[in-house]
Image (cartoon, rainbow, N blue to C red; front, top):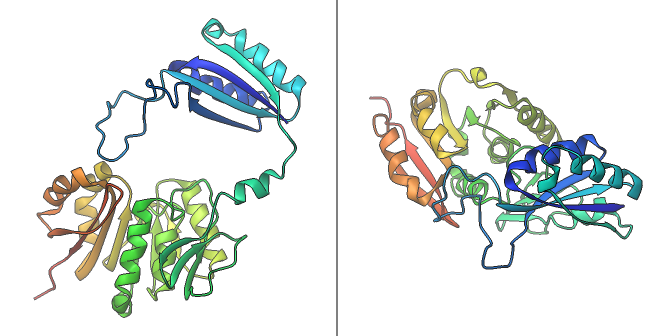
Length: 302
């Protein structure tokens, strides 16, 4: 294995990364060239930090591409440097990498995730902890939601803490299902007739695969699959789409049902409460690393 390192401005990172993959790279990663210096710049909108919308990458990025052999890496570097924007790219080096079991190395980075003493998310290559009574088998993949992010953990904690309500979850909706982890979690606690929807076909396929691996039955598809009312509605996406979806999500919520919203920062709580106020009152149900979980109950029918 050979690693190619290229230093370039942010404007060329996406084009160069795509080109490197086309030229035979096994993987491409991007790092801040100024990491661990006074010029290091966070660009992913960490909680509590206001970041300009225009920032899409580091001013100086190191693009690392992994190749099977040195000739392939050399040819790729030559073609990148020959582009019209090549003079703005600096070749930092080609370095051989020791042979490793890359699958085992990757797997070693993912351990079981504790939701509660009895509720765990466990990759397929790990044995569940002895105390685990409810286990979601989930491997890292393309779709969002492996249990490591605070928003996912909070949603699953809510399901764990409200498991006594499960007999009332005769239908459940996971809107923006990603990996399907919330739908699977609801099924593990006894929810029935669960619909998991997403706008991304890859997420739908991932949800199908994960449901099968966990031995649960879900109905999956695009958002128009969701029909009627559900005693439990979950949406772990982002604040902006959550606001846009307020009328639709509330329309799908059965009287007396629970609406679980995640994917928003603490500073966005008030704007979400305001967006949903015409239908129900949202309350903060959990906080984790600057992220918030909101819950609302639709008034029961009179």
